[in-house]
Length: 147
Image 1 (cartoon, rainbow, N blue to C red):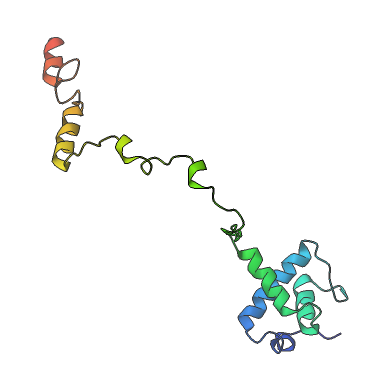
Image 2 (cartoon, rainbow, N blue to C red):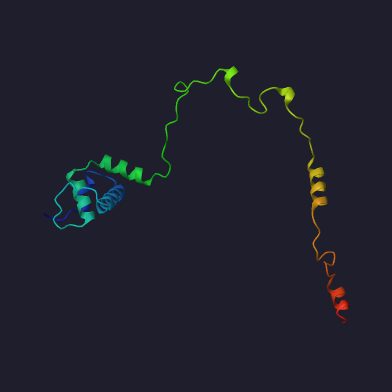
């Protein structure tokens, strides 16, 4: 059999870039152990993949779906519909904080940005080097050593 060229496959997959992607993906799946649908004839995996595309033993649409599925990072999960799981009646539902009895909610203090900043500044510890530290500043240490 003659070597398969891209020209043999372009009429099956018109976009050459997509053809390369599909053939490369199929060659990788053959290398991973997927069954081959054409005679091997001591050909390498990319040639086998191109021959499968040229002979239409695997539909290009199936190869395209397989490629897309292999690239996807997030798999869509069907959420249950509202009719599948009806809501509990209100008398059987657990109370939701902040949405149940408004009279039992506690009052939240309101603080301005300036008040918050002043409060944070009063909590900030001073650095030891700013006050001379536990051993004093550099001049006091020199004095203690007798210099």
